[in-house]
Amino acid sequence: MNTKLTKFAVATALATCVSLPQYAAAEATSVAGATPLSAAARVKFQVNVAGVLRFRVGSTATTIDQIVFNVNDTDVGSGAAVAATSGGDVAPGVVTAELFSNVGAVTITETNDSAGAGLKNAAGDVIPYSEITATSSNNAFVPPALSDAGGAAVSPATTTGTKITNYAEQWTYQFTNSAIYPAGVYGDGAGGFGQVTYTAAIP
Amino acid sequence: MNRLNLFAGLLVSGLTPTLNAQVINLKNSAVPEISIRVGGGGKAISTVVFDIPATNVADGTPIPGGKKIRIDVQARATPSNSRLVSLQADSSQPLTNGSIVLPFTEFYWTAKKGDIPSGVFNGGTQVLLEFFNSRRIFDMHDYVYANTLPVAVGTYNGQVVYTLTMP
Image (cartoon, rainbow over all chains, first blue to last red; front, side):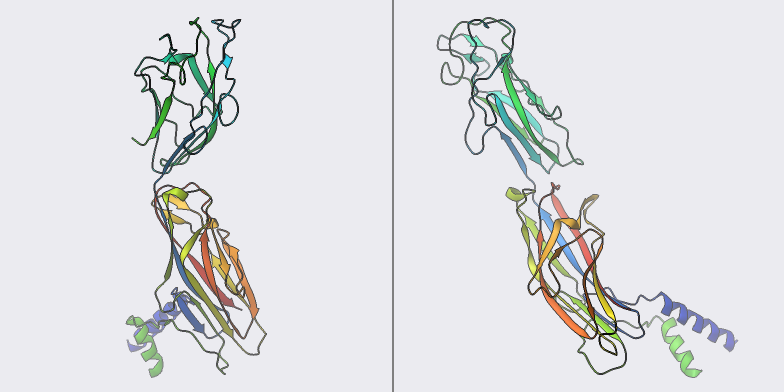
């Protein structure tokens, strides 16, 4: 009986020795004995990432781009879209559109300063905002359609997982020229009410 | 036989030998020995913290860690210069924030002296240094988060394992 117990103990001891690692995973470790030898130590890393929502349309900082469409007399109401002649940080009618969020899905909403009236000239004539359309270099990140009342919204898909939205695109504006409007200068700097505001928000 | 029984009894009762953290001074002994220290010493694992402010998230601005880490390795065996000792870093397990991961390839370090050279984690196992016994080498590493990846808000934790081996 004693012999059996001794054999069991010795076998257990040997098994324990074999299963022991050759190093202890502490910050400082030393080992000695028959080679090969291996010793390990670890260092932890922690990264604290703040939540952020960045949104840019057009020029940087506080500059507001003014996009100008000149409709020639031969083109008035022709239905042929008119490209912008000036304005935009990339090219006439073309603006940078960047969106970054690491918090969750983002919604972009358009509003304007016309209180629902649309683009006016000095005489009080009106061109509806729906006459101005925009396309994007990436169909996954398009601007909301402009409207006199405002409030149209888009929700671009997240680009990574459920929290990351990261787009760096270009939006190009054009005047659709679908109707005949009285001569004049419409919008900001003329009859007023020509400023559109895009607001990015995390619902 | 009695001594054997006593030895076995200690192990069975759970009193397995432990390796205390310590810095070994080279001494005149025939027994091969290696030691490694990463950080402040003792058994606690040092933590390097990186705080990414909202204005800098993923904008490529390098974010330095909060502390420098001392890495101290030594290897002894006879005769001297007979064994090639290797120091490796294993960064294969990324930092995690729940199910979201952040690879260690976003981190690099600069060495104060260069004895354990500057480098960047490769997201796997990499050799940092090779030297012949019997020597002691130490350096201070200053870690930096490259901050180039768009990462979700939150706290990410991970660890790198440094391993010293002597054949």
